Image (cartoon, rainbow over all chains, first blue to last red; front, side, top):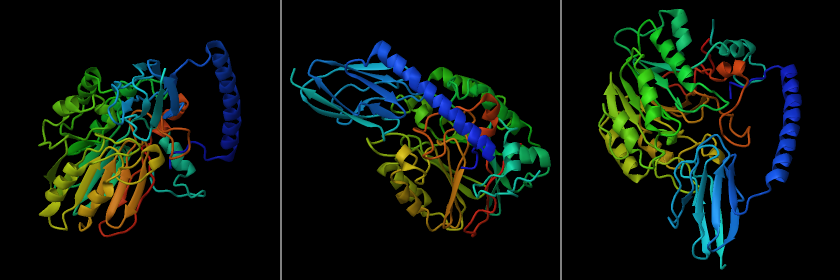
Length: 124
Length: 321
């Protein structure tokens, strides 16, 4: 790319140092949040154009919730149209479905189709 | 000021002067000029500075803007309407307005009617009234693109999900849609119906007709890992192989990248809203946050000079200072 910021070595080093501080800071933040809230059951976080966890195993009848933590809108769409699709989820918006019959369900983001995930539904 | 690279020590297409020039710019636009089948692009600032750089009356000039993302208000740019307005101001400041604009998609952030309303309202200030659109994925979040088509295809004969072609001054323009009916795990997609239409659309054209193709997602594999490509673009380009001059204009990736392949020149435009990272340089292709004073430099432009029959680009990097 031609529009990179740093073309000067000093700037690059400063940038590297500040990135280091930033990453330490955000790690600390993440730890704090995790210990406060814990990881929600059957929640799939959409972050950095990925569904996490990529494969979620639940019991039939469980509720599954996706939450978008990106600044980009994402959707949740069943590949085989086996469950209702979400509308476009903006930042921090959630989408919930109830797991139906046991089986394996693949889904993707219809806006960014590279993003795919799997739900495995087991007998309750 | 020259927009040619004079000191490119790191072979990365930017020199110190070019970088500093970039910093003076916010909002982007490219002016394309076709003169005797030769397609040349200039930055708006170049034209404003030179005053006399516009083509003569018999030439054709048009302007590409892209990725306005009206409605976006996050850290990467809290006022995308303002930077869009600046881009229009630059167009209005040109001594002779371009014949028309091409918007290569992502007019809106979330396909909301009020976002389209804001875009349309701000666009009224532009002296150039003819605008040709292709949708970005952000414009068709309803899944069908119905709202987009109702608003932005009024002046053309849109086929299928909204593709079309038109002729201007002997140049054949083709607007393609590659953001609908995307398949899990895949990239941008044109689909069989559109490809069949394209084949028929160019069938009777003479091979010397200059072709300009525009679509939102790049029609070449910029970075498939991030979805920056179109799965069936090869087939589309196959129909255009026999033409002596093909220029492909895309948006989507919010940065200028160029490639020449035979008679085809590929070019991606900057956004008027926010930058995105260079391929593979970040965990994801999401909006890139830069310090406020740097935003303008990240919205800079690269100009292209394409000479018919040449296999390489004459100018790669420029800016809009």
